[in-house]
Amino acid sequence: MDAEPALRVVGVDAFYGTSHVLHATTLDVPRGDVTAIVGPNGVGKTTLINAIMGLVPIAAGRIEAGDMDLSRLPATARRRHGLALVPQGRRVFRSLTVDEHLTLVPSGASGRFDRDWVFEVFPRLAERRSSLARNLSGGEQSMLAIGRALTANPRIVLMDEPTEGLAPLLVEVVRDVVERVRGAGVTVLLVEQNLGFALSVADRVAIMHRGAVDRVRERDAITDVEALSELVLGTTE
Image 1 (cartoon, rainbow, N blue to C red):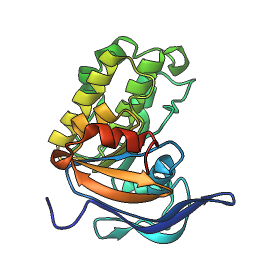
Image 2 (image 1 turned 30 degrees about the vertical axis):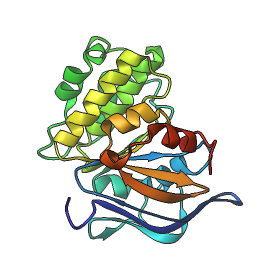
Image 3 (image 1 turned 120 degrees about the vertical axis):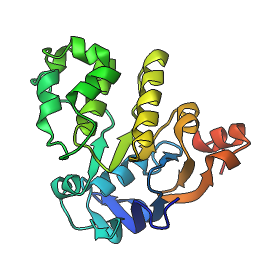
């Protein structure tokens, strides 16, 4: 592991309206690894991802990528600094084709994740390349959301519930993509309610509780998966 994390969240507070969602949240994301954020529903996992991406303003603390303080930068600037988001709920543009989605995001000058790469790992998208997003199945839209983010050739990719609603076969495809992305040296921060999937791809697991990261465990050190599952489901304190 590099001494300097790829991404640092330090003492971040964030609100939705008058609701205080993140409470002095702190997390280091090591470079080139997969860090999974797990926890019960409503503890602030998606808010944390959106705050990192600049979609939710922070009231206190800071967010750093390497030596760059991103805290006050808009989302567009954060993308230029190497962050990309696979949002929960896909959020594809219904009136654009698959091809158009994959040419929307400017690629890095020497990036390996181009449209051909996306079509290689998601051959179904190649078959539907001329189809409008509104005519795609939910699984196809999920593939498109992942492909769209990767064509930006990010250094850090944030993935919010990428397996939500997917059939088991597609979950395996997403697992393969995450492993390929990590193999290319990209840092992955993953929010995932599917604990089995999270544990299968993560190098470490950050557990959120009541708006903050409660603890971080190396994946290899997690031996009691049942107890962790109870914690994630919110059945234990």
